[in-house]
Length: 136
Image 1 (cartoon, helix red, strand yellow):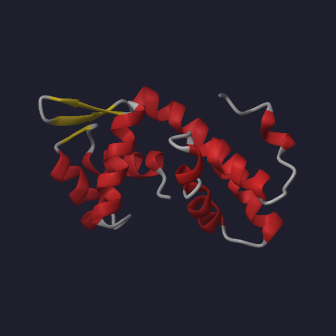
Image 2 (image 1 turned 180 degrees about the vertical axis):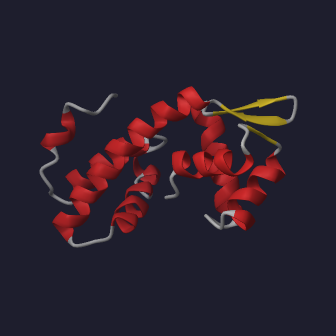
């Protein structure tokens, strides 16, 4: 699961602007920054549009930097939980995030941090330390 926040922040830093056309953003993410493949870049843009971090205005994708900061806080908790789970079961954080993403098939379109929390619970890990920090 590619980080929405880190990828978009890097694209903004590279271009020096928060406005892109779709092909330009894909090109920056894939070919210039080499962060992902084309399919992943398209999925990342869709995730950004769904979450409201990216808005489409007259064919131009505009990244809302205030919402991006909110996403960053959510990803921070998600990454912290993924690290905790990875240490507990001896996996890499990336593997934990990837497997947690597969829970969408079972639970539907839930926030990534909720999926990571559920994945930890599913693996029998005590996730109570994160319960109060989850916003549902």
